Length: 195
View (cartoon, rainbow, N blue to C red):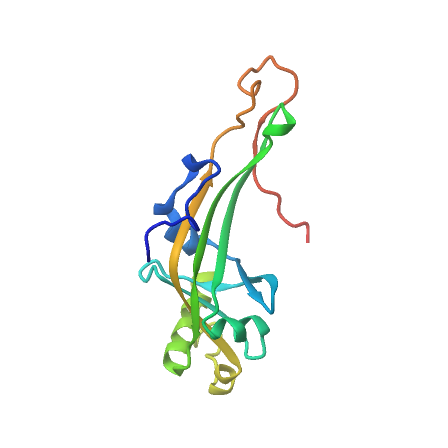
């Protein structure tokens, strides 16, 4: 990966820059927001993905062979991928200082299609294990057949640059440290879906 450039340099709240945490954030994340431009229009699409910190400059996306996004990205078009971990919702005694505790990584790169069936099979097996710890091929689920592999697109994204940013801690409003001030302040866990 290249050194930080204007594209990846943190400008707003530069003190929150944590490039050394980018690999950890990608390894822990569950949803990658994949951004690209096609025919002059911007798109952002959520994907499940695979990332292994042992190979820090690669990230894998998979989906249907007919996916417009994957077909476009397989051509080597520029792509931006963002992964965010939400750690807490920060509430303040002042409206302006409501915030979130988070860790976020943004990657820039280009992709290519993975055609080798053995590599495809291994990456998909590792991806299932990353999302579902302890599940084993052959015991908990049937391995993908050649027909299933033939209908699945797998892209290898080469990460050229990345940045990471994080916020942690309590609210930082002007009256938040004063227990006698009116209102409330603190951090609550992220809300979960009610479904």
